[in-house]
Length: 409
DNA sequence: AATCCCGAGCTGTACAGGAG
DNA sequence: CTCCTGTACAGCTCGGGATT
Image 1 (cartoon, rainbow, N blue to C red):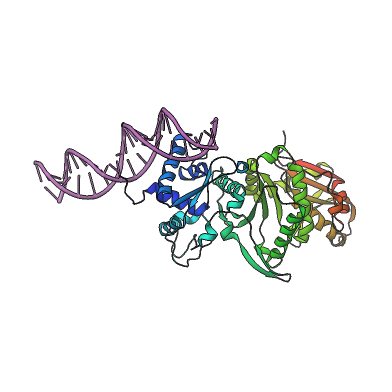
Image 2 (cartoon, protein in one colour; image 1 turned 135 degrees about the vertical axis):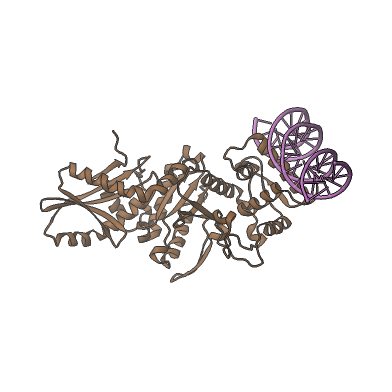
């Protein structure tokens, strides 16, 4: 007979279900066996344990509807939930920031887990597909080949309430990710169910939240993750809708906070670019410099407007060329948002440079890319643009050069 | 007290077969 | 076909008790 005490495996499974709320047997096998592709035997072992835990009424499950895939989602019952709190040494009323990485070597006085209510823990059964795509994304992050530290926390910890001049609000991203403990990203799972108006409302909420933060507190980006199927059909159309809603809603924040869109099967290269972005910025400067020196300019200088909006100036005699430059991934917004702000501030920038008795030749845009050429929508839904954006877009497409970051030799 | 032995329970593998 | 259950079993650990 099996004793009623829990084995280490049982405990591991309960802890994992506490951290990730609800998971499929496959996802659980990935985490518990610490491999991205569990073997059949490892999977069947998880089933064995899950069955026993279900008999002990610590775990329950719900069959998935067809649209969310086959199989079941497993999660803790209220009594399993309480046992998990014991196993994780969660004290009554404990507050934790929810970041998972430090969990295994928790230091004195620092807690990752919080004493949550069961109702907050219980996975959202009406949006199972959405939740499972989130868990897939997080597990994929775990198994990335990475030299940088990536940490994340789920929405139950990432939610924040705020007060802005537009009133009180609540921001509830699906998850939040940290690279190297400092660069922060909000993660949104996109099942394609939200239309333009809902997306616009979502970004307006982000804008209100951002508007009451200090500059240093702004995240690097909002990461939109979509499922794999979308890559085959309609990804560009979907991206254009999201991008338009973002640029219309965010105002000047679209020049500071990036919006990055990636189907889950492109997560590796997207995250890999994010990890190396600070390093790549140096390469960008070298690349731009040689590009313009080769075009006959005598020197190239780099500046930042308001300590954030970077641009370059190439000088030839007493004339200069103004250069807007960005490193961009296939689907991201910063090149657009940055260019909008740059266009608005251009007269100030010009006036500053012209103090040195220089005469402007023109404006040129150079967008650098690493793996994939950035996708620039050829047709934006014009009727949705607000203000001067249509005009700026047309300027952007004028004199636009793409440069690969790596020298193609 | 140190050593040895045994068995209970834990862990992992394998396979048959039911349900959908 | 996949997901899941039921079952069998081998290897291993660990603890209790007997033997030295």
